[in-house]
Image 1 (cartoon, helix red, strand yellow):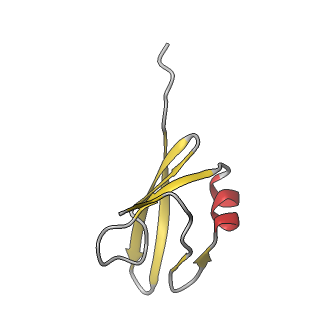
Image 2 (image 1 turned 60 degrees about the vertical axis):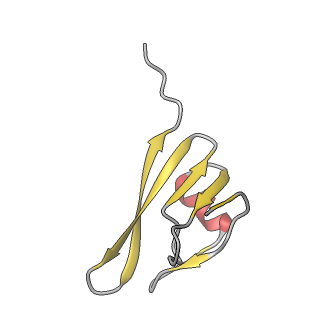
Length: 75
């Protein structure tokens, strides 16, 4: 399901609000996608990036964020 409004989500170590996420990635939120049955989004779109949210679960539930340029300029 794709949401065009922010929905807070949590890991074992952190709760991610809109303000915190935008400060973390340095860009403005546009949309987020949740897979069925999941509480953490799979993708988050910002103005300039697609952020892939990877769940890490070694000792506790945590995430890492991979930013990919949305509109790369090829010269």
